[in-house]
Length: 439
Image 1 (cartoon, rainbow, N blue to C red):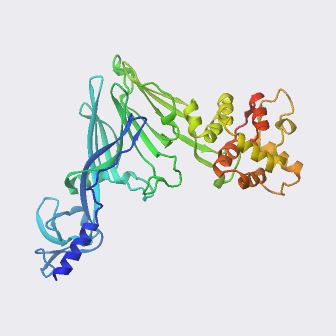
Image 2 (image 1 turned 180 degrees about the vertical axis):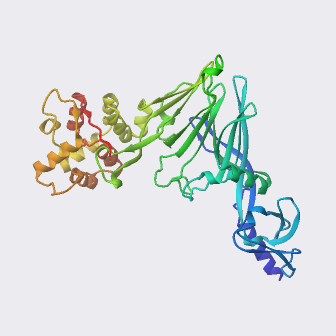
Image 3 (image 1 turned 90 degrees about the vertical axis):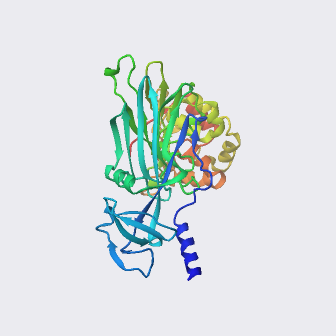
């Protein structure tokens, strides 16, 4: 009986991840965007019909039953290593239930605030811990409110969940968990929060899109003008999808009183198939500036490509520049492709057809339909099938045989330009621009 008791104790302890090791908090833009830790709690969830006994013993008389109908109105707290005490919503003692048949789930709460030109903004949050193995972080998993000088001005999540969790959670003394809130800081002050997560991340934080930091994020930024508070909204809040800090935003130039966000969107110019789509690909720029009288947010459809971004990932920088009609940045990025351009020309040169020979025959033609360009090439080479919506796939197959996949993906798939010095220089020198399509 003693060995059985020891085994049951070990099993019960395994139900909750260990919090004894130091937690890691994410940080971006040299600490200007920092993940916030919250207080750790535990909630016991009845996952089946469970007996309530008179005493903490398996031989004790059954005095009740936890069912799907009543479990939300019952409360459970630890009695010892093996048993939970069961109480009703009024706190009255009902009996004991065996701990190992409950699911022990971690919960986190957070209370944080900042000053904004004399006004106090606070966030009160409670929710289950974000799990990257879940499909997403649904609003039924959390609830939070934003207060200005003690008055609620904004909320998200499910209020009923917030009430249930605050009643049922048990504080884990001294333990903390990472939350999905991130503090936004400039050199002078804290200016707001970012609430977000990456639903595509695996347990190692990589997943299908390793350069993606947030699949979803909401900015919460006090923004009224201290000189004329009645003329501005008191809280700037909006949703962003696909934020890339490490691969884009952290590399771009901005002032010390500014924070950069780079949400990304689909890119479906050249290829129409779902497998070829550039999900979480094309970035835009959100510039948050802490001014002397207010914080402002400015949105731009384009980013300003610099040498740090080119040096970190010249292929990606080239594709972004192409789709932004930034010919100067295209030229800088392409200067690093001598070896790849040579290999492409030697092995797949028959596809290197001048734009002038297809759809850009006139010196007055500046807008290029890349899909039409490749359709005409395939027709000239007599390799176009009767029905083939991806006319350039033959060139792609050849390039993939001799060049790194990432290079082909960015430089060819996302632009449609054949990767050769002749083709790229022709496009840049004539200052051609693409004709965009929405699928």
